[in-house]
Image (cartoon, rainbow, N blue to C red; front, side):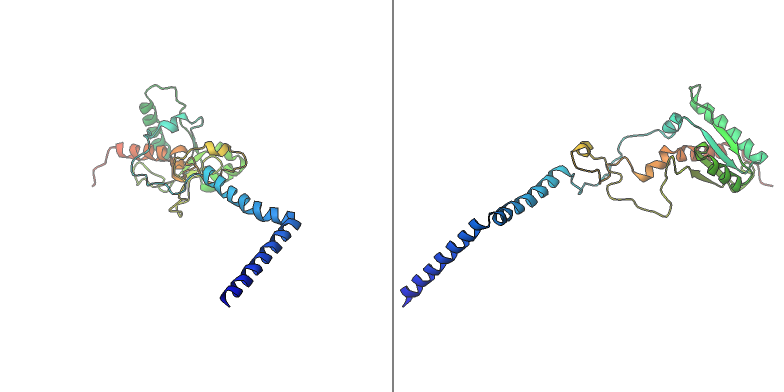
Length: 230
């Protein structure tokens, strides 16, 4: 009885295999697609794995190079800075800033700072919208007397030249400030969808001259002689 069931099972298996082989031979396109489609999908995954950089990068716990605070600010072709408001004490304070700038450069062939005063913030905005490129950076003083009063100001950069990150955004993308190889950008058919580190948002405070101007203003205020309190 057992041998008979075994022979029946083998005959059914043989018939099923023969049937499937005949179907595969008759439907050659379908059979070819069933074989090549998984290989095609697997090859795409392998190429993406080889081409795209590893997003799991180690932490950066040491400084990447050094940069002098005023180095990039010196290289800017335009040192035009808009000022609000246009008061006597404000302009006197800015002349001291210019004197400090000249003493720091020590005879270098660096363009002088050109201060463009405006009476009010509305005048500044009107001039900006008429010609945005004419105002790369601006300083708005809260106190019209920065020499005798407190030094409170706001620095605004031109978003069409240098887009400093908003103060409400505490973090950028994980790869924004990473130094990764860029050779894979030129690979045929691959778009640079992952940031390569050259667009680190916080660096725009340095490249726009924001930090350099802030240092010049603060240091000028510190150098002013203190008047004794009465």
